[in-house]
Image 1 (tube, one colour):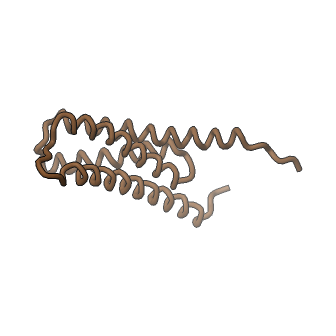
Image 2: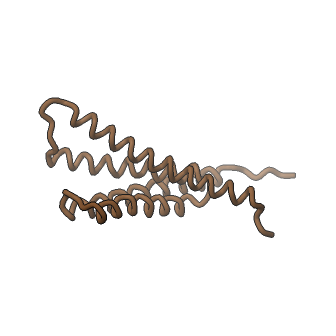
Image 3: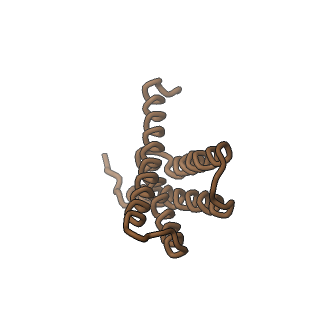
Amino acid sequence: MPKSLSLRFRNIALTMLGLGLGYLTLCLSTQLLYIAYLSGEGHSITSQFLAFSAICGVLFSAMGGYVAAFFARRAPVLHAALFCLMTTSLYIVPSLLFGSREPLFFAVLNVVIAISGAMIGGWFRYWQINSRNSTMTPQEN
């Protein structure tokens, strides 16, 4: 039996909402990290800051993948993978079209961090759904 049009639209809308909110989570948290660190007097980008921002990048990307999977309400790992694809394309396409001032190593590292973090968030949501479903007891009729 084919899905009704309203159900298909709802699923597509939830997917788009999840991807948009996941990306917004990733962008805002990363921006807040840079604002908080670089707003002080005399702060510059050091190797310690790059290591700290890489760890935060994994965490922020995991939050974004989780948010994308949460709002989609189904197939959390698939939606986390879609989030990875969207994030990667939104990072690579402007870099290729307009050039990048950062070395290629940093660009590849940023993509790897975003992909790994987003998939961690999607798998965490998957684990959360499965653990919730396994603890629920079936009701007898």
